[in-house]
Length: 129
Image (tube, rainbow, N blue to C red):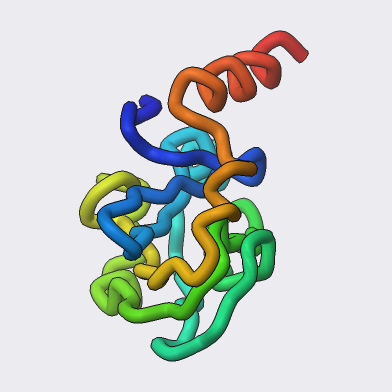
């Protein structure tokens, strides 16, 4: 499932931008590829991040995967529910399974992101390999 109105990265993160706050998570495709998620290492609130820098780590029964920030800014909130319920990412990656919120310092970083249709075409390329 790919949700319209979000921004996407080629590393399979999504960003829901509301004003100058971006809520960040991993896509449905990413959580399916990872399998059962058993641990999430969240960033610290107040951390300054750059687009394409590591902000979190998601561990599954298959692998550990770095999560990269789609935007440049400062972490303003984390989804602490993931500490006790990391499987929320598997159950509802676009809502209850969000990872963090970032106050966007440079909205030009949004220009490098994909829209839903572009991401759909990007992911479709993997199915053909």
